[in-house]
Length: 299
Image: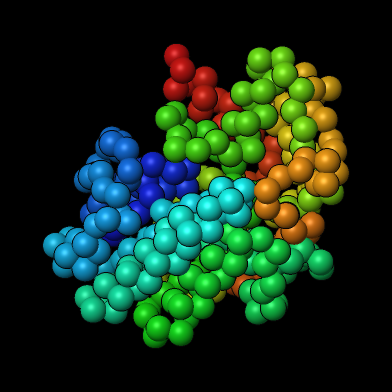
């Protein structure tokens, strides 16, 4: 039986992936998170990985695969506290890489479209990275230490992941829109940032396929539809029957955020599609599924 260790299981992707893998009776799933979580079929434990003995943990669990989802993923938080960002996104990854080499573990690393500068869009895996903020820099540094280490690995870059889970460690674009609009508050969203928004369930399915097939290399895994963040926010408002007029499209410069954002980081998916039969859920259908899931959770 294949044993998989997931880091960052209290985040949106980590939680979805833990649940997805735990439903597969041929897998043994162990998940670590900062806060206590329960996922049926998985063994979960809390750990601050920054202070943990990673080698001891990997030796103790002896996984076949580690899916490393834990990260400091707020671009603004990374920009403001570069030390904390580097410690989490680079130094922790370095320790995990070292343990993977020592114990012959395949590493799957979750990366980001923010490794690109956004000047061209429709990025291929071998396009030159050129991050415009420190979050992107830290993830690129982690990618490079993985690829140069010789560890058996898969790097999965994704874009604007959205979805719903109760008690998430941090909000995402969808939960922010819902939270503001349900309170009747106007919400400013960039009209000049172009992404390929990724349904969290699709990403979890894709990561499961990477685990089952042990596909190595770097892949782009996101949604298919290219849209501005503002237009995506409006789609969320419509799907959840909220007041679309409360969405206030503005330029990135008007948002005055700590970290600069790349303009167009839409991803080209052909490489992953040729490796795996991947068909991303259309945004409208994904939002409908999330609405139904949210209702089901809350009743």
